[in-house]
Image (cartoon, rainbow, N blue to C red; front, top):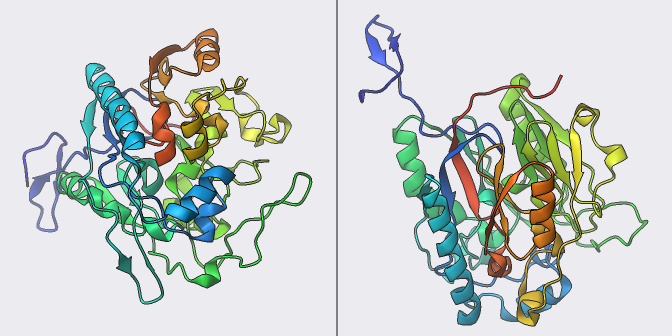
Length: 378
């Protein structure tokens, strides 16, 4: 084996062999950041028309998406977002963070299983398709058919990490047949019982529905994460971890990182529209619950109608460590609030990434943070 830093471990014959040290190590959302994967815009294609896609995006974007599904994104959208993501990557590197990027992919290419066919989407948001727990990267079983092979663009990176000692797991690849989707689904009105487009036919989940605090993870059930998916991860991680479900009042839930955001030990940022603080898990009783300020409105009409995200994307921040946090420059109220709460906000532009699925947290996957596995709750 390669010469590495851990003490030797005995083989069955008694020979000592040096143990590999994984390049993957991330237990929380806030330990000091050392290495990260950032998504890529090249080849981005408007996602295929499917009920699980349209039920999760704002109405205007859903109508446009249905008409333009399978076509390339307009150049005017790509160029603005590209300029901002390049600036974001430069900022991360200036902070001493190693940045990895996936391969460029032609997402217009059609692919198929025995049951259905689709074109792709993009690889802008690695946060959705992979979950890092300690030294393990888990490829997630996503519910959007157009994202079925999305992690293939990250395979050169994953294979490199595996060869260097990381654990690499893939959750069961879903069939995504009609049995997984409620054919009679409609978005529930305010006051109606919550319902989801997903059935419990098979386990599916997006990694972005989970956030990590050492031995405790928090999750929202959503239109891309079902109860069976949560249970699969709970069993996979075993008794060393606890998974707590966060109840969301969002009528179209998808991804926790605009609802419930872990900032530092003892501090969590919540969305006042989606979260009832009196119904948070009891494990959070000793934590400071910080209520997100109302986001600044988006004046740019094209961005308003093409964004795949809601207005609370202002909460989609990336922690560099327990104090420094990258946040959207446009949302000045959030920047002031973070400063008031004792953080050091670093303003950056990524507003035009919203048509491709997110902002700073969505666009990244923190692969290595300097820290060890701990429990932050009694």
